[in-house]
Structures are given as structure tokens and as C-alpha cells.
Length: 364
Ligand SMILES: CC(C)(COP(=O)(O)OP(=O)(O)OC[C@H]1O[C@@H](n2cnc3c(N)ncnc32)[C@H](O)[C@@H]1OP(=O)(O)O)[C@@H](O)C(=O)NCCC(=O)NCCS
Image 1 (cartoon, protein in one colour):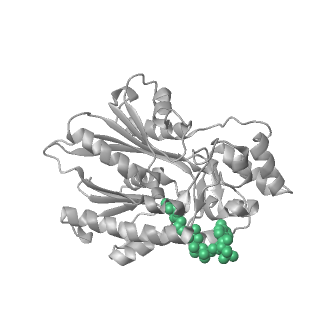
Image 2 (spheres, helix red, strand yellow):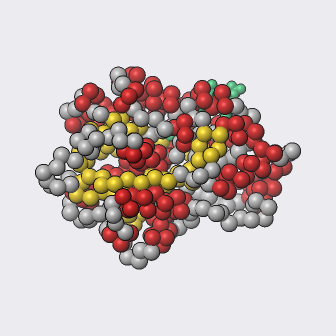
Image 3 (cartoon, protein in one colour):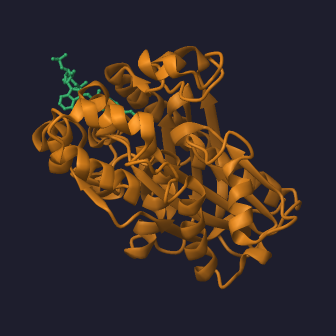
């Protein structure tokens, strides 16, 4: 059976830099608290959130500012400047340019995000519109921070079976749109941010070593209450009832310590599972490209598995947690820095809401 490989990658993050200090002007938090517990120094956010944070930072009555925001939008304006699909589009354009391709060359798009543009259709359809595609198949996954691993595993199957030749896998997140930038929401809003990462997956020629080797996917639905967002979901009737906002049920929720413990445990398990399935040792892997949720999670996993820090690239200090975009952004940056060489063994792993987690092993 033929193998699939990643031909090129792309990424996009908005220009607006949100520092810990800016967040500390909007709510009760500090650069020290955020840095010590997460390793995040700054993150990128779309202009709408950035401008909102600037106004919030200087608002004499922050509660009143936020109340007005949720009642009338930003000074009466409710149309967003950028949507999830806009972020996906920009990362896709980088990957296409690197591959010397146009959107017309794509046979399939697999897109993954937590927060969609619309309830329906999925972000993949909106992206197809922006790319000017009129019959290329697309689908959207919502597998949280593990979305890119899930999407990559699907692309691999379609290439292996010969169904498609050129597949776009893109993770895009506009997370800053759903968090509450106040003391009530500070446990989560300091962690998450916006961005997108893309990969173009094609068949590897039989003589080349490059290619995907295996994927290992898991879900534990019994713990979904530890990390979730009701937002416009059908857990309330009607889904968009004002009382949902008044009762504080539209805000994402997380039990930080429980998530931390699960993340460390599941990362460890799935890395071991992936290595054992391929009869590969830690020493033989050149790069461990882990979802960037928290630098302490990365350190804890690396220490317990004896993975040298030099093999674990980190960019969370610049971007925060970009969920499904995190792994492809990290892959793209690590490639751009020239750290990944032809023939290197790369283990990609991610964990997030669901809980969903997974790992992929591939030779570059
Ligand atoms: C969220 C997280 C950073 C919190 O760190 P922690 O060490 O568990 O936090 P602590 O228990 O020491 O501190 C909690 C205290 O800080 C406060 N706090 C929460 N967010 C805060 C913030 N942004 N700034 C300042 N204080 C904050 C809490 O109110 C609480 O105060 P209290 O003790 O007076 O009740 C940590 O649990 C974590 O990273 N979890 C994993 C989250 C994650 O990665 N999720 C995504 C997975 S894909």
C-alpha cells in the first residue's frame, strides 16, 4: 500500500500581539501568574478582540463595558472583521504557495476547529467559498486540540487507499471570540488565542523514506465536564436564550487541575503506544511536536519519558494555546527554522477537550 507524506506546511497568526500586561489591565491577573503557571508571555488575537481588550483596559467600569459589549456589540457594530475561515485561508495560501499549487489542485479539504463561522455549514465550506472551489469535497472536524492529529490520520487513509492525491489539512482557531476577559473568565481567557496551521498531504514515492507511519487516536467522553463550552449548543432550549448569558452558561468552563493531570497522563500513554507500535525508542525520534497547552505539561511529560528538551520545540510563549492550530503552527515554524531535516523521525501528539487525544509518527 502506498504511503502519504506532508509535502508543505503553512501558518498564519494575526498581527495583534496581546501581552500578559495588557490582559492584566483588563482583569485581575499578572505577567508573573501567567508565566509561572503556563509559560505564556504573549499571544496573537484578531483585531476585534485586540481592540476590545484595549478599550476594556482603559474602561473606568469594566463590568459595565462588558455588559454593553454583550448587549450591543462594539459600539453598535456586531459584524466581525475576521472569522475562523479567514485564518484558515491565510495558512492554506502559505502551504499552497510553498507547494507551487493553487486551490484547484486540491482533491479534498479536511478542516478542524473548535469555534465555527456558522452553526452550519462547517468552516470547510466557508473556506471552499473563499478559495473559489465549487465541487471539491470538504469536511469539518471538531476534535478540540487533538483535531489536527485526527485530520492528518484521515488524510493518510485517503492517500493510502488511492482515493485522493492532494489533500489539504488545516486547523484554524478564533478562540479569543468565546472567552470572557474578566475576573470570572480569567482562568481560561489567559490561555487561549487565535491562529491557523495547514499541511498539504500527498503520496510519497515508493523509493523515498518520507511518510506517515501510524496514528493513535483516543476519546474519553466521560470527562467532558472538565473542559467544555455550551455557547450556542443544544444543551439549552432555545440554544441562544438570553438567560444563558445572564446565568453565565455561555462561557467556556474548565477544571484546570483535572485537565492538567489528564493531559500529562494521556500524552505519556499515547507517546508510549506510538513508539511501541512502531518498535522505535525515544532516542530514535528526532522531534516531539507536542500540542502547546502549557509549558509545565510539556516539561512534565518530557521529564517522565526522559525526552531531552532539545527534541521538544516550544512556541507557547509567543502564541498561547491555539488548540487545533497549535501542532501545525509548531511544525511549520520548526521546519522554517531548519531544525527538521529530510529523514528525521517526528512524533506529533495532542490532547484536549472531549477528552480527545492522539499521536502520529512520521518520517520527514
Ligand atoms: C489553569 C492552570 C494554569 C491553573 O494553574 P494552577 O496551578 O492549577 O492554579 P492554582 O490552583 O495554583 O491557582 C488557582 C488560583 O488562581 C486563581 N486564578 C485563576 N486564573 C487566574 C489568572 N489568570 N490570574 C490570576 N489568578 C488566577 C484562581 O482563582 C485560584 O485562586 P484561589 O486559590 O484564590 O481560589 C493549570 O491548572 C493548567 O494549566 N491546567 C491545564 C489547562 C489546559 O492546558 N487546558 C487546555 C488543555 S488543551
